[in-house]
Length: 182
Image (tube, rainbow, N blue to C red; front, side, top):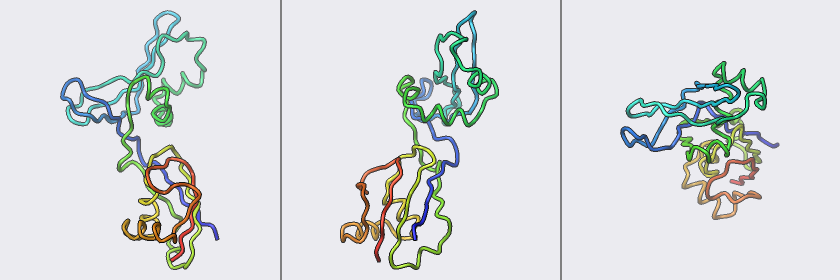
């Protein structure tokens, strides 16, 4: 029987960028937007607060864009400070590259395994799905989901009792499956 696990974000990730006031490297996205229109052009920013000093920084979402070229739904979401839009924009590689930021997902996600009935089985087939592109080490997910120490998971991997079509070392942010034989 195939078990389905889901990696779910619990909050917005921290934004890694140097603060120009205190030299801290972490900002918390507030989920609020600032929108400024100048005649037919519009600018929009996602606001983030420094975790050390509270200084506000603006992450550019739209810059000098003609108002008519922006979808009305997007404008409504910007004006409504939609937290879902903030999450989408932080995931967008274009926004991250434009603002020269990285995301810190530590303590911003959880693993839903659907219960513990799989823990006593001899062979476990699991499909792991990511609700957002969260880079996580598969060994950590497997250890957490199977209630095993990471060293035990590493040992099972080297012994060939933990197999997958993808490489389980390093970080993954895409869906994968694995089989664990005890």
